[in-house]
Length: 316
Image 1 (cartoon, rainbow, N blue to C red):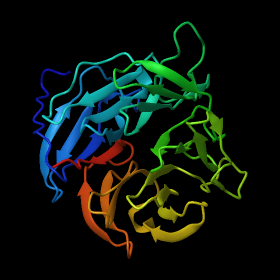
Image 2: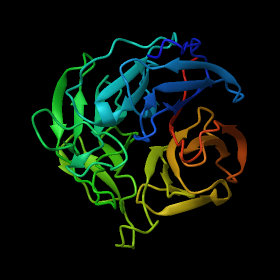
Image 3: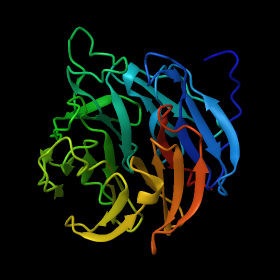
């Protein structure tokens, strides 16, 4: 941590919103900087900042586990951030030296980490750590850990080809039944599902009609609403899908720019939260009519793009 940076994060309260907003500060590496998580209250007012220990690049993929611990990821350096509800960062743990960028959980305390990088063609604008002893960024698998943080299973899952050729499992969501995980390869062409009970790939939930990897007909992120419907980010609009993958609602957010890459359901069941990495805007959106009822402008728009995680605290 930079000694000039003072963490002011407060103990978590119901409805607090957290944004992954790394302070980018390198003229050459456009993903490098002081890891930072911003805290807002339920009314979207600034509340605190945590400068993360053990990270060197974007802190992304924020999410809460069932115990109320906040998780975040620096996939470039194979680092995982965990913050306890008192607002203090927990000691760093080695989860196996992999480029994890996302987590989902079950009610038994198990943790499922998505390996975000594959192949050996890294993003040209930034450092990406390779696997130990290999010229390889990763395999794009899902790793299961128990509540003691011990690795118990690696699921060899499919991922979707995408334009950059280095992305694997970038967004995961546990189905309410806890029988399978729904996931995407960011800017790929599919929404995929994996049966974690029988250890087998399921039929794709969504396959987009375009085969042109350079266009913007892409699947970006997914997350479940409390009622079991699935939020699906398409860049400048959100689809809500039923169990069969059919679109039941489309919410147009194009006036806020392309680049919506993070999604999470709100505690009240009536809204969801989303974040745009290119504009630096976080939004609270009403589900029934798609209206934006709240905005947070981080000021971190392209090229200083670092808004790469959003989560809401649900414990009271």
